[in-house]
Length: 116
Image 1 (spheres, rainbow, N blue to C red):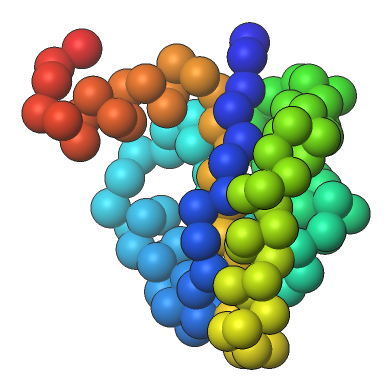
Image 2: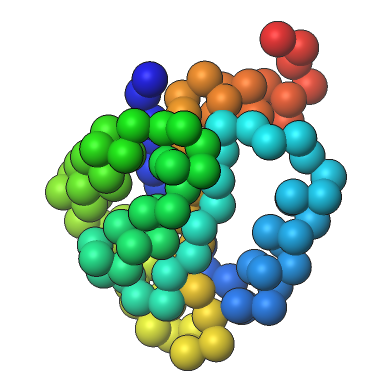
């Protein structure tokens, strides 16, 4: 299974928590998780992703490799979000998405109104 990781933005902690609760109530479990970190560091992102693979039955090593590869190949994006997080203040989180490729594709298709 292949995985994807991407930084999505900065969010107030309470808003992110509320969104997580709504997602859990509205959607059946899919192969996409949204995670938050207080710092824009590789360690913080790995820590936020760490509980996801066992919960999902994913390959932990591959998920970690995906996050590390993102970190190594997207320095401009990382620097941008690091600055936005710093500008936003301590009551905010950096939000990221991790998921298996097939589930992400299905999610995007549903957003575009395509049926699988």
